[in-house]
Image (cartoon, rainbow, N blue to C red; front, side):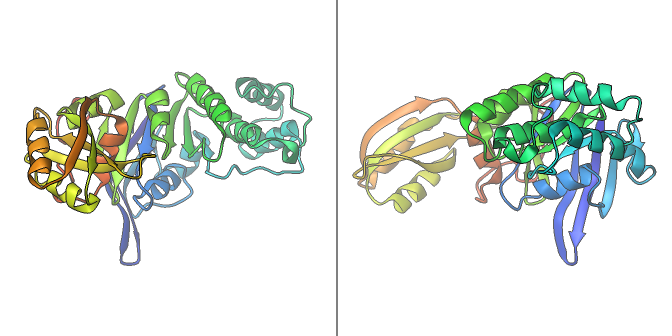
Length: 328
């Protein structure tokens, strides 16, 4: 349904994205993850047809963006991070307006508008002026305008940003309900959202896709070693350096704590390694107090940090873990 091959975007002498390649199958939800400045927004804007690529190809529903950009845009619904709403219009009036400019015929508009409102649970709000809506409802209207012309592909940029927990759950359930009949790409920095919403994940860092797979497979393949949570006393920066020098350790990060006298650290090792004894020995040998050490399971956050933290000892800096788990 969506095929992206070797996309690049260059601004002057700066390369925003380089050789971005991935695909999304019909009915699938793909989460696009990456730190700030990694190239997520540039990629999303190219996918939505709002920004031309410098190189590479993009096909949506079989249409090539270079050969038939109008057909590509007609097959896409796009929700930018800030929903493009007219605050003084009613929900129903706004959706009729959007349907018209997206080419829905006059005879089909009432049915399409009602269908979009029904799917977004807005059927009882049609006469409400948009400026009177909560942020959560405005986000629903934003999604409704993206699907009012019933496109096969939907691009959602940070769809839950700024929402409270209840609103996040509502929008998450809405997105999941759209899968199957639509192919969806969403970008987000909220990692739990990806695990709960997306079938697959593409992680982008420094303008390149560094991994694509299901969340479960990424956690198994990239953090298949051991995970440890430590409670220590001593100088934090030195402790991190000591731990990074332990054979097999690939990630060390601080964890939040209310105990100001002790430091909590999380350590992840390479797959098929168990450096627990070496970790404890290294800390004790250097004079750190080790008050607690426990084995933990890896999370998607560990995968994200492993692939986007600029440390020389992190693996897979340029390789891509594919759906089948082979380096591409």
